[in-house]
Length: 47
Image (cartoon, rainbow, N blue to C red; front, side):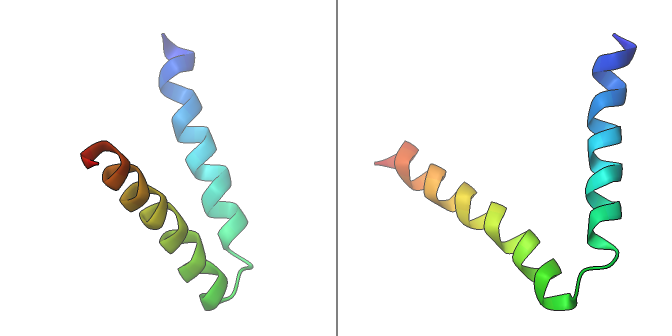
């Protein structure tokens, strides 16, 4: 149970550490790609 709670926190922490040296453009892309993927999946579910 503890591992199930700790795993998402650790992956998010490593993801944030990976963004520290990134430029603003790279950070913007990191946030836009998942939004686009969600929009595509929502269209597939509606269609």
